[in-house]
Image 1 (cartoon, rainbow, N blue to C red):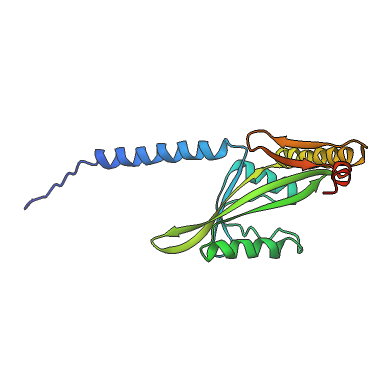
Image 2: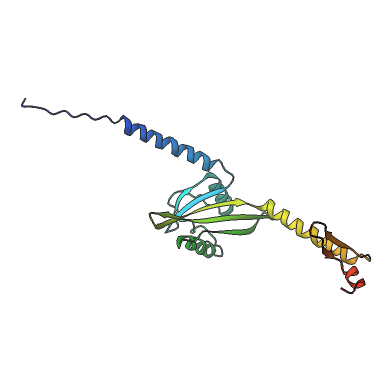
Length: 187
């Protein structure tokens, strides 16, 4: 034997770094999958880059299709919905951050969803869109009940044959006068 060379290298730091990255990814996945919001991202070809469990469930219930990595998110959409979502993804792919509210019904139940679209910018180049959607039905129902209550109150105030005015004591201003009082005072 003429000679042999033996090389050795300590890779424990590299393995520790790899383990740490895996732990961080597991924590992030747990956070994303354990929310009641829908979270997903698509690339420039509208293919799923990432999708959380809630979005998979909602999409499957709505469209009967299982979303997973690499699937084109526009493909299973009905023809009347597909162009709407394509325009939204394209806006974000051009660098725009925005939010859209959608109304739809499931088994006769009204639902509202608010979706945020955010460009994925890597090194100054937009390479996809991240989306976050949440159910805002209870907020919309509450807002509508306020509108309904205000309309009922206005109807009562304007049909009663008594003068009614509301005064803001702090501002020392009249903030509301019903029709009967306005007519009585020639306002």
